Length: 510
Image 1: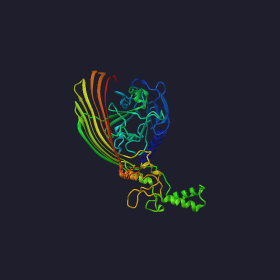
Image 2: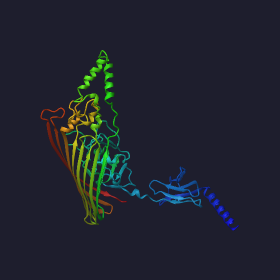
Image 3: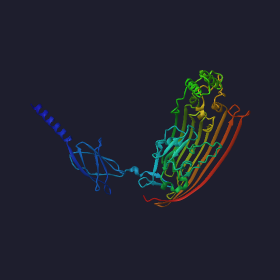
Image 4: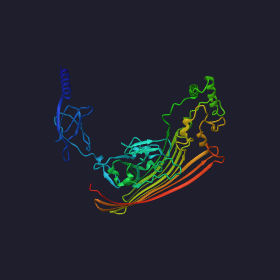
């Protein structure tokens, strides 16, 4: 009898609890911050779409069950969660989100993200680190809101279009201004090969601490007309106080061409050509038109019967890309001096046959605090980039024009030599007997000093140096298309150096 009473009591308590937790009640309260009521705060029952928001005085009212979790969120404030209990009143005090104290680089200086009104996109090093790519812009694809980054072609040395403000002109350049550690980059192509060169080829993506993309006119105004298409500010890594650390990493990746076209094979091509010839009306009957097609295709069959050939010229033009990347860095410092030193090697074989890139780079960033009022710093980098380039996109001897070739023409002869009797000049002859090599050497450095005049006023003086030297070695062998008996060689070199100074005051009363 006693056990039965316990069982009845337990069942009664369980039913009471279920009734309590299943009972909907009206919850009211007030949401404030350290300065007073917060209007427009969103209150959502977690896991549902049911919600409300606070009125002008920060008050709210919502129907909820005991046990429900209310989520309080507001722009610039840390989100809070409160569980509905016995009480019908839940008051909440929201605190500022520390993420808004993040510092954003804006022109000459920095600004708190909380006070920033300009349209700036910020990408941190952890968003681009570990990506096997020789191009900084390639690491930014799909990571910068409102910025259109397009791979124009498969060439390693160029073909990256960055559009920040949309297309304002059909013919004018849309290239943004690149600024690395406060130095405006010279992106002039001094190579005798007129094809576009990526201005950031010399920069190691693993050295980057953050990238700030300035979009609005107010943010780029300090750069004048050079910032018309937007400004990309790149800040490299610096040493931090603490024990020295050594980082060594090696990565490799592969790339494959996508969206290949489904071209006609030999059987389909011959059938279509025969049908076209017969329908032209130039021949008396089908036998005569087929004979003309047969004679036409025999011109380009080389040493094989064209009916036994089925060349997919896309497979000849493209290859599997292999990317090898090695990086080593040493970082550390004490209360007075901090340093970041790095070295890198990148070896990339492109997806287009005959296109490859090798880059060696070194960097040293130093900071030294002389005393409480004065500090010095140095940014210095050197890179050497060697590119095996291919002919221009519109040239008949470029792999990208291989789609004009016919499937009945073999790419190679029986002895392994490229077929020199194809419908159009065979780019494989150009690839085997010619080369176009561009070497880019770059020194980018800056020394600066900071003088603290007042707790809120600092003066900075900077001296920047940008040295760009390009050489071109080009040889077209005698067996390459369009060449004379002895072939042709060409070499050129060109260099530019820019020295810049910046002097400015920073007033910060945060």
